[in-house]
Length: 446
Ligand code: BGC
Figure 1 (cartoon, protein in one colour):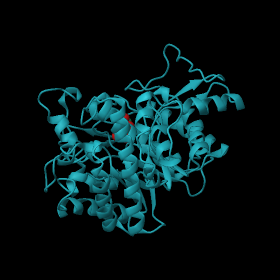
Figure 2 (figure 1 turned 135 degrees about the vertical axis):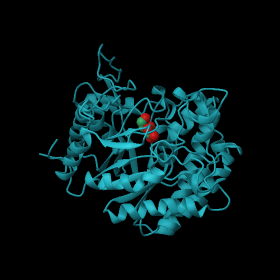
Figure 3 (figure 1 turned 45 degrees about the vertical axis):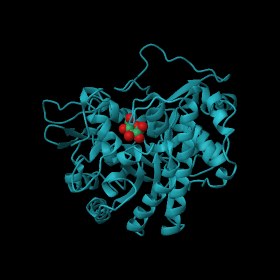
């Protein structure tokens, strides 16, 4: 029996830079990922791949929406390229850029698919990076204005907005590890400042969207991290997994962003740099923080702990994805429960999926049994988590199409639909038909 409630929503997700292409068409301004990929001094992205063409969704979105419809997709979460709409991020609006998203929204609605908008999936207009990027607090207001422009345009047509995709990646990959644009390697206090500005930017955008669209429209934050699951499903095991999930020494946590945004504090396990930064925060800033209406959880992998909260080392030959992430379906059962216990908000899974080196077989089809098995396992565990009491209202698979996987370039494929990057031809994989059936039966077919 399926544990998915009757009104559970099923969909797919993608992001502008990863699929649109058309990087310099119709008045679009450059963004930090254009710059990062085009950098001639350093190979930031494997194989020097770029998002210049990607899946060419800018020109082929009608074909993509038709494919979504054919596969029963109910929700499409996509992101807006800020520099397409406002080329320098804060000045004149580029009507042609805005019209592209208008056409996409109309196409989705005409096909009975709900458009969900992410405002920012990492592609900051270059002009704003030149002003310091997210280290500059002025971006809070500038992001708020951009959010208001989008809200005005899509009011009445879009019911779910998400502000910033994965603040953890923005801050830690972009400003600390340097493996994502803008490629900086800064110390902890600066990274903490980026996080702080992102909390304020989320909040400003949420206030502006709600003021324009009204309270029925819901605004979410989309964090990520690695969550723990228990070796033994006992009260002690669950308790240990809960605490291990939010221990910041682990380094890749949901709470580094959400604790400040929602609980207005830093966890005791925060390192010295964060604590030093926290001591400088003006208490009035906490009053500016808005609790999101919902959380969008991007969950890919977790780690197992014993009843003492000690991580259990993975055994030799542990199942891995193409990008060497552990296949750990249990995180889908326990992760949302941990998040709900700490923040008490309704949730959607806004991303989950498998990277694979899919190939076209001799019969012209793409047989991705591994992806089907991965999704099946994760969804069964999600069902158990919902039965345990986690209010997860929907699930969005990452990603509908194969696409540009950031610093990994085109090496890895996450899609339900294969993309031949030489021609941009789309070929539905076996998993696409499988997922269509899951949606049709609201999870009974799992
Ligand atoms: C990001 C996506 C990315 C996916 C797989 C998430 O961190 O939001 O943009 O493609 O993970 O790596």
